[in-house]
Image 1 (spheres, rainbow, N blue to C red):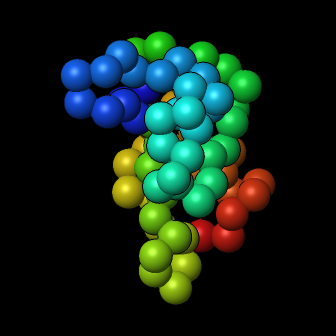
Image 2: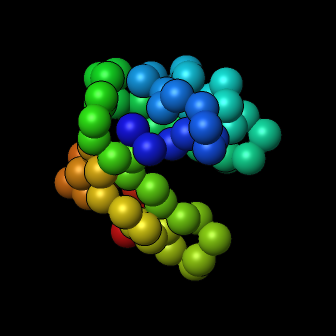
Amino acid sequence: TSANISNKPSPLTADDVYINFQDSLPMIIDSQEKALGIESTIITFTLPKPQILRIGAITKEELSRFIDF
């Protein structure tokens, strides 16, 4: 993934992401898969409707089961 702090190893699981970013992320969606070498999917919830900023390991179709875009 690419959800890492500079000069730190990239996390391999949602738990790893939580450990690194627990104070700055309101939500982490766990695909239950290790996505080694695949970018993270990034979504902003700061707009009236959620918006995907970058498609990565989790597709829009997969996210649409949980989030109304």
